[in-house]
Amino acid sequence: MSTFRLAHLSDPHLTPPDSAMRGGGLSKRVLSRFAWRRKRHRHDPAVLETIAADVRAARPDHVAVTGDLTNFATPEEFAAAARWLERLGDPSAVTVSPGNHDALVSRGAPARFAPWSRWLGDRPDAEFPHIRVRGPVAVINACSAVPTAPHLATGELGSAQLQRLSEALEETGAKGLFRVLLVHHPIAPGLVSKRKSLTDAQALRELLARRGAELVLHGHAHEALLNRVNGPSAAIPTLGVPSASTPPGHHDPAARWNLIEIARGADGFQLRVQARGVRDGPVVAPLGAFTLAA
Ligand SMILES: [Fe+2]
Ligand SMILES: [Fe+2]
Image 1 (tube, rainbow, N blue to C red):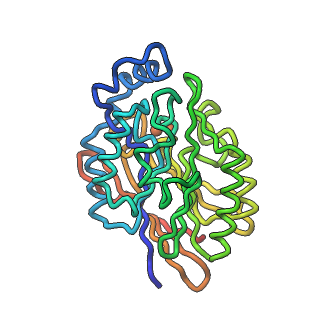
Image 2 (image 1 turned 45 degrees about the horizontal axis):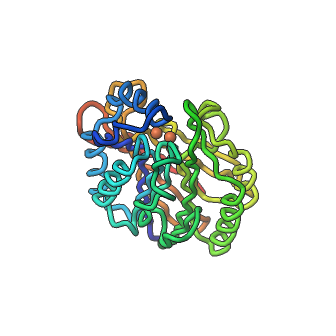
């Protein structure tokens, strides 16, 4: 029985370059800069580097980053995030699902996340969801990141993406692959407030109940979360991780990441999840482990 090792981290909120803090008139980006100045101590680049080094040292088969790499979605931040991703691993082994902060405003944001195309999927010209088959696993990368009005952090997949997702789940499910759906926003009900929610989560849950998936990975809530949504037979686990850059001692939980080991057994897939994160200082330690049947 071979094991596929998948790393999941999220919401790095990389510290913006100084140039990303200037200009733009009165816009959502300007309002977000006020919020960033208030919250910037919640995201420490040294903590993020410690987490990223621990992920690299674990030598996972694949890394999933579920969004909010930037804060204001400026071209400078996209370039800085691409340099960060470059260090995280080979682009063919790292998949990024953009977050609401990566699509903060439509004006001035890189079109269709172009600077990150090598981390979105295997075919840069394809639309979301991107599908990457790696061993027994299909990484199905959906995008819930859409520009929103000020003070909203909602997400949306849209009916066209949901239709393509339905086909992707059916196709990869028919091949017996372990389907991991990446999406920035949580999909189980009640995990975030309405202004932060995925507006078509109900439609996605209905789709998953019909087509199935083996695991859903998300970010956005900046919390360690394990929930379940209905599948055609068994329930589908949904896992969220805190921001990968939050130091200990804040309102939000401290940075952590999950190492998810996926093994095909006689009765289907088995999952073992090991949480690793910072507790007191800039050292990553094991935080616990649990198993899940899928
Ligand atoms: Fe975030
Ligand atoms: Fe978010």
